[in-house]
Image 1 (cartoon, rainbow, N blue to C red):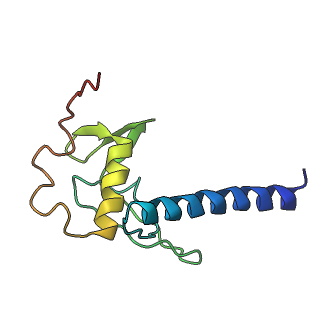
Image 2 (cartoon, rainbow, N blue to C red; image 1 turned 180 degrees about the vertical axis):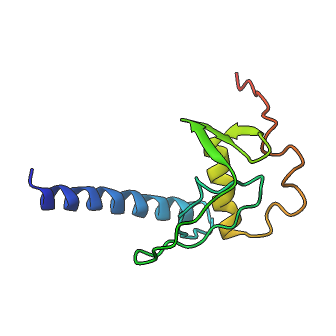
Length: 119
């Protein structure tokens, strides 16, 4: 498959998944809100890092207080370890709803996991 055909196939698959998501949201009477996710995996949720919006021509290098240790593990500047996906997800929520975690950021919400047995 040629490169341009491959790009078109990937875009069509992405759009069909997007349309399916929109239909599902309508079915359950949920509101759907699109957002951009730039810097949500690099920024530390626990340290309240600011997350700029990505701009292609912007040459500024941003620094963040935490770091990804390995796949699936993120470390805050204070050494607190948390799941990298949880860190990114919380940052996406924070971008869409800035006050969602007001007063709860360092209360153990993100760094104290609970094991739930669903069976």
